[in-house]
Image (cartoon, rainbow, N blue to C red; front, top):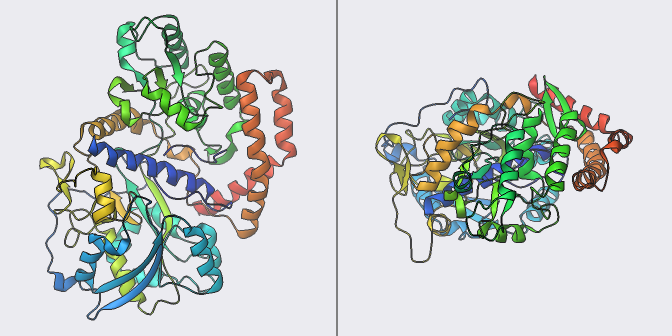
Length: 550
């Protein structure tokens, strides 16, 4: 069971109670950004109190001599997690160009497998690199920051990092997310926002609607009628009736598409009027499962959606036999139309549990072994520059897209983002970047705020639909903030309690949907959750949320 919502940009799921919600959010963000980048091959800010700078203008031209981080060459040792498709970080052009620009040379030990073990061993034994290119969990920051293993960056940012300082002022939630429980900052994070991001983008087969002269559904009742029409007719016009009205892989994307229609967040841990709620124990969640049970019983949803593997599901999508999906797929997007959030008899408000902006911490930390902390923070500061104020094209987008004006730039009028390089034979843009230029499809850390989609058809379509059909309905005050932190004893309790609660919810919801368990047993289900101390579980999240809001 995922304690956040879906779907989709990067990062690793943390293994303890610390940041579990944020970890899943990071995965959501990763998937959405990766989709956008892949789409090149083929908004709005969701946080209150945020003042985003403009991305307009040309890339700034600055005398490289004015941007030297050090007047002599220095060497820093660093560990990190590389993309499995990527080249060794030391061979990438972005780091070579940065060395020329800053006089800082990195000796990287970046691995795709075994990073967590490497990171944990370094922190536990004291055999430290100079820099850790995350991901670090909140528990790492809360444990090794006060011990002095990770140095406090607060004063360094104030004195030597004007771009970071500005970003923390422009994005208050970024500062909150990066700030540890003792009020200090032990690692840098990232603010990421693109038109193509966000986890939940439900779609419906527009050719099927046209073939059957059907309208786009606006409510769950409308959707039910459309799915019946898909089942009972020949929307594919192939005479075989091989269609499946709705398909998905397990519950994640379905949660995002349908739960908000019943007045609940797609996340298991959510907010209502600043109070934490456990979504699987709500009346709205019960109505949602009853709706899915109705679809399942009447053969309006793939009967294998709970048990099939992801590979089996993807094989079906390639056959184009699904009418409705909880999430758009790059491979067959042209036959689908994005759906706005649905409403129901239980909730008349359109709400999306997707996201248009993401905040994270734990992406870049300086350890006590580092003899050059001032130079290191100055180096990191380059990645928090606005897109039109980067030095030699270096901004927060550079660890993902490369150098502006060299690898990418905006089209006329900043209407879209375009690549400026030619792919090597057999490589798409994503592979080309990872093998030649940049270390990550996430940007790792810094300020990555793009308001323009990529110029490719898919990402342009995705961005335009996101901004008109999804982003206007995002309600940040309904989602538990990724930056809320737990005390060590709280994290330990959550980890222990979550195991049993998650397993029970997953087993129960499947039984309710398939009819193996009657909804007459709902009260028994709730009592069993209470016996697992779900109220105490919620209070731990409430306490973390209250501290985050101070």
